[in-house]
Length: 416
Picture 1 (cartoon, rainbow, N blue to C red):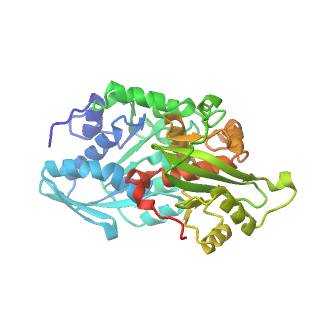
Picture 2 (cartoon, one colour):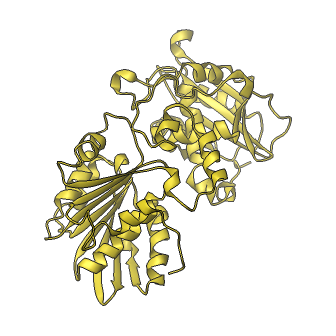
């Protein structure tokens, strides 16, 4: 393997299971802490080396929030390094099965996504010699506990890693606060534990996050979210709408009794501007609008521009059908709330998306959108959130993972 610099904490993650290690007697390991702190690489590599060193002909579980995120964040980093050590591996994607041969031993690694409560059923009935749970705090408890229950082979071990959430999170209360009772090695990571990060990059992350996200993702603390969701946003961040834009999208949070909010987004010199909006509150107006009327409002918002797609609240099936009949290209919005808020926060703070001065409803909600402290601060209050939802839909659906591969994937115009 090409020479890599590992920090002492990373080396401990990779070797805790080895004979002679002071941690050898532990049944599990949990690594939590800051983003980009090197825990995922060390844990993934350590897990596969432990499996190949300790077992032959056994089955293992490798779990992430989704199968796609697991392949992207873990396997794409680990498998090339195993190859450099002499490993041969083969993946059957149709079965989500990875077979690894190394040091004269062959084991099977089944890949699972723990997206929601129904995911627990996918993992029932199989016997594992060990399981790796990447981003464990993002998975439902039922899935994690089912994965752990599958590890009944003698010598089996559990491997967890995650970024922090709130102090009431079940993973924090059980596997971290009760690590000693569970015979679990808990290692807390900071960015200083990743020798591949330069001081400049660490400073960039420190500038990127604020409030609870700073405490969680930079300091690695399990803290409660407080107050405004976008607490960094102020009037000094507003700009005038640009005269011309290169590309256009519309995002929409649809409501019948609740307000409907639409935002018109234009790209100019690498920055997406929310240049105009439509906002209708049926309660305040003492009347409801039909889907056809909302479609007319969207036409007026577009103003004849070549809008590539309309990003719509995934629950608005009837409205999407009306838009399709009018020949609009429609995409269901990505609707993971917490990850969408984090992405939107990053994009706003870094200036990748900008709110223009004419978007008065969006500006108002940015000051009123708050965490629900009565629910432990792990979700937002369902008030003043309609422009916030359409903004989040745009950020997550257009500027999320697919956009990283190139915007051209979505360059489709309305049929003229």
